[in-house]
Length: 187
Image (cartoon, rainbow, N blue to C red; front, side):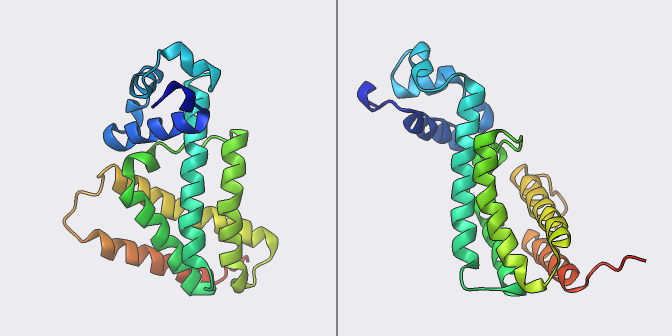
């Protein structure tokens, strides 16, 4: 990378390549600088520290995820939209396991803004179920927890039993969709 081409976006590109190759721990400032062909202090013109670089990486990852999921749910509603959302989310995590595990979940402002797009897609996919605002927020949380939890476990190769992961995920999709069709009764 030419020194003139150095920017925060270019550093994120380098850091994500390092993550894809070696996992989240591979994206150190020293490694990014080395792969960018500059001394580490040169990075500070573009990012304050490693935390900011990780936040910028998370924004990019969240944008990629939202793009993938948004395309999958476009033109679909209700059960079909939720299935498409869940499959696209998992496909992204399987295709980019290190990148997905590098996603920072802290409510850092830039990451939170990027996450708002993903939440908006989820809210739109849930609209057909006719829930009130509060129930929809709860459903978004549960949907996110189910998909994210499975994706993290799969990315970490944590499922060791011999049963097929695709079948397990299809069961999870079925459970979520069935749960959305059956409102929680509060007695």
